[in-house]
Image 1 (cartoon, rainbow, N blue to C red):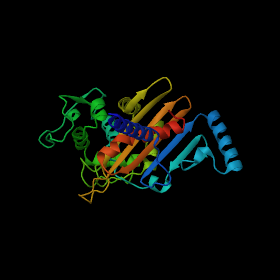
Image 2: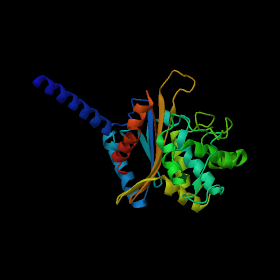
Image 3: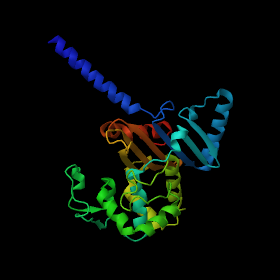
Image 4: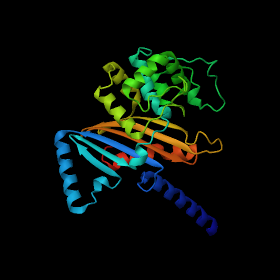
Length: 303
């Protein structure tokens, strides 16, 4: 009996240790299979203090705690922090993070009037698949639920309804990634011709939040409404996940690319972030995708 108890105790400890590691895991500079980018627009008085602290620490120690995750610099009231700069500039398929852009275009082009508008899709063109998760089989969707559950057929239909010319016009105006939608109007963001880097993701989100994309404020406000994933007394977190095969040309590979992008509003300012990484399987990726990004946001004092 004592032997059995010991084994159970060891297994429990192993499980606890694994969870503890996952809860504190970060994208490390030594691993170029991930990147985390954070742009913080802080209030002037706060940024003045941060600039002063960063300068002082750099001069005296050469190893400022504010840059241990990668590198950072300040410009006016903006701070950019990057983990793995080379990967942060690497253009990859946006996968479902493009639902942010797709939603904004659909709203601004009047394909969608509100977050509560009922949305449908062509069930003959996009028939139900056995592998679809249960949340893709609901009787009805609006933009909020379609976005939350990342309902791909809804967004493929939206792209089709927007049309090739209008979609291209918006993507170009937004300066979104490589602007390339040539591989197919309803799937160019799903390991197709469209590619975007983590740095480009945060700059796009920044321009959207600032109202610099040439779209209506109603469209921006509605998009924020559907992007909101957490609200408390300290901050508002807006975000979107994305995932797909990391090696689309290798059918035998199970490696998955995972994204988590968005922004946080708090009393210090607005903080735009983009995280992407590669793991050996979908399950491995999904288990830690949001946790790692949140760990970086916590480390930076954003949430």
